[in-house]
Length: 362
Ligand SMILES: *Cc1c(COP(=O)(O)O)cnc(C)c1O
Image: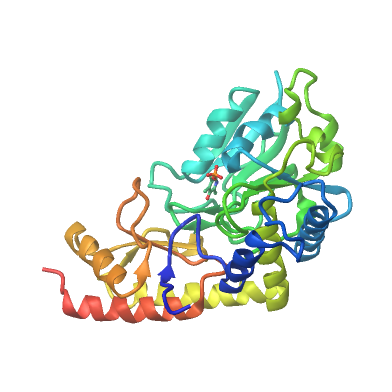
């Protein structure tokens, strides 16, 4: 542990140390088989047990109802931007999208390839500083679904509650899945790339209500139809074995902590400390409006670009890594997902106070 630093990177991101240690051993020799974890057949009883346990733990942690399928896919969250409308829209069919950041924009672009898209809310003009309030938008009556990005990783905004809609919800939860309890029964589909809150890059979790599996147009390529993967337990082709295994270990870790209700309390505590440090003076300015603030990603600015560069360099030198903001927003960003330790936030807050005292704005 001595050679590790606090890693505030937005994804791939910090994983629990005990998970990394176990994975390191299992990569060389998995469960005394004499075969490494990334060498073993995905059809072996050992790996099938891993995949089954991972799915069971995800179901338990999210209280996923039995009429939903859990799929482990590849292609990243970005492939879901087209798989969702490819499977659920079609000529003449409409999807409603809330435009709250770069990831929703990309999803809207793809959806237009497969159907009609309505965007009743966008915070783009104001720099994506907020998510909509209930009642600030309506879902079109003839819409198949309301699509939203639960946590906007780049802009540091997050829906505090589920959006209000009488249609089924579809959500990109890539950067806040399992960070708090969610009522899955309100959703048609939830997806998340693993590399923020679930594990390493390489696997994308899709949770889909089973009646939606038969809506896919007949001319859809086999690999891109959800039903293909649902029918074969995500083993239609070789699944991303390593990523599924690590995700499984992360889920065991989360269960040990006490699940989503327990981690939500810890996440709130971490975020509150950091936002308090930002709000204490005018030196630091948070990007997001207060009611929309994310518990996962905290983008902020200093008085000047020069001070921001100095801040990031000096933070890195004391073991606070990954604080550079996204290239589209600049400034700084601290990503504090489930596995990011509280001690790291304490250290960052101390560093922020010292830095502001030593480097007054001109
Ligand atoms: C990171 C991210 C994505 C993109 O994920 P990939 O797996 O790289 O395609 C999509 N949506 C959100 C909210 C993200 O944070």
